[in-house]
Image 1 (cartoon, helix red, strand yellow):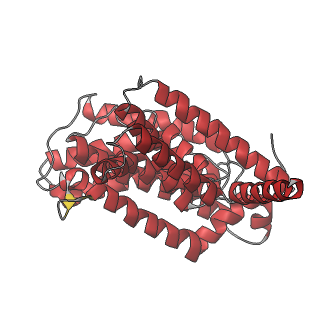
Image 2: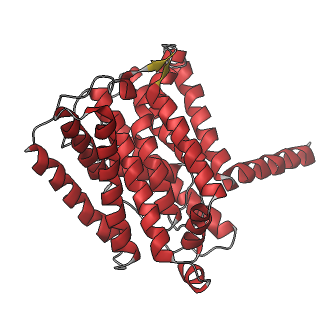
Image 3: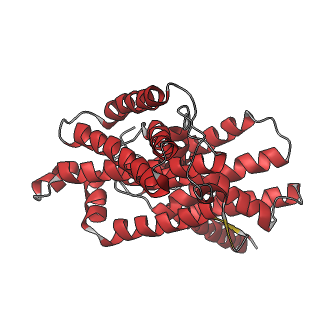
Length: 332
């Protein structure tokens, strides 16, 4: 009997370590556990309509998370994404408000995000400014731009049909923001796993010096990585503007933290070189699930911040623990 219990404990220990060692499995297990718990606490949680609503609530910072994942994989960080979101949204809104139509409006928003993202890339990749400082400065520049061009006043006039991006539903069931998220993650996965940009993103994060010595133009790829982050922030900005029906110069405040939390909770290492886009999406769903579940249960809203912060700290600890188990260097 004693040997049987020891065997069961050893098996459980092995399974636990196997789950914890695989970031994607670990994060997905947390999400499924949250769903199981909340479905027992509320009969309204585990319904199709509520699960689709969670996907919509997660969409904006999940979209930002695509570019943020590339940045963090390259051992960087982008604190400007919330401000770029606002700048792109109001740029698009002003173009449509001037009567130039939905196509030019969307292009203007994406171009705005690309320009701010590329500027981050130049600052980090060519000027060698630390990512934290460079993107912190761009946070202020992009926010100031959004406030200056609008005079601090929201823009409400959009071209006809733009509302479908944030409010539409395919077959009157699947929200368009959810579809946009799926498509963008599919594109991001292809870039990350099948292109030079993806390979060099992992390589730069794993060893900047080794990648440089191998003849790779690291500066160029850092510019591309941060440009991608700006574009995904712009897509998120267009989605949010469409959903709420206005271009808000104050939009996106705090979204940089949400996107970073989604990436880190999803298993991407802050130390660079390890992670996945699928994990980021699951991380975004975990954050949205916590907020949705606590709202349904009538829990005081500020507890959401406590819960998300606690999970974020736990995720970073698990990442450090994994690195120690594998014999990797832990910068902490």
